Length: 352
Image (tube, rainbow, N blue to C red; front, side, top):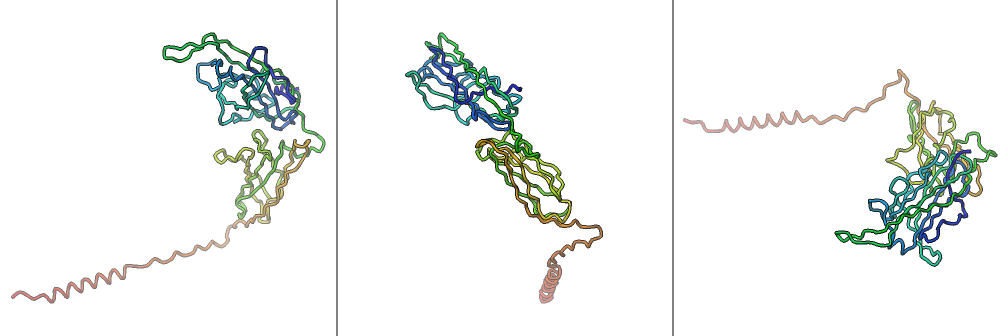
């Protein structure tokens, strides 16, 4: 069994809130039972009494943080069986210490607990499940500091007096990652998992034997979630073509989240090829109970011309249009000017 990830299953365990601590901490995961290859989200939720947050919470580190707390868990960066996806922080939200760096949390709605109003925050991370088994995520730790009194320094800034450190740990929770079912598993399955759609286009579609075309395959997650960590699609053998290579579309032209584009370089082997044949890419759709499905890409018509052979008639190059010859009119004008000068000098009266 692989050590996977500590995730809080729904329904949640009771959030941790020791007596006389104006804060709570809890962890949850969705979906509760992901399959291998599926995405799941882990949410770390915590909150503070509003009055405590505004009046007593102080920073643990010298740098300025909009939310001066620390949240740590050993699995935040992923494990051998859970790939952490990048770019999980919200674009806006209070800064705080997450793990060994600075990140952002999402501010949530206020909650009423035991007659007090709590301001809530959420850190969310997405992972792609890589291994089947039971996942235990523990040691989710929240640390913060408070002070009940403040004194002004020499420039009038409030300085906390008796600083007290608080530590909160969320209870460990198990989540079970299921393997993909063997029943109905296609023999040519290569790891595509999710609620997927696909499309394809070829360019150029008019070419000569010896030239190659690019087949661009676009994979889309219908739920709009990230496809990071998903294996690249593997093309089956295509009759009439040689596969020269493949590459994912460069980051400078990266598609929006939930979309990935893969370019396959194909070379037709004969002028008798009339189309890129239809392609089937099997995948597992974990939604609605889970099922094996197939992404069907229709044939794409192309025109392949025979390659020129040695000794074939040379290609006729159209003659360049004749340029106008201005030399004759120029010489005629010069001769006329000389004639006029001679006539003028011949008519001048001679001196006695």
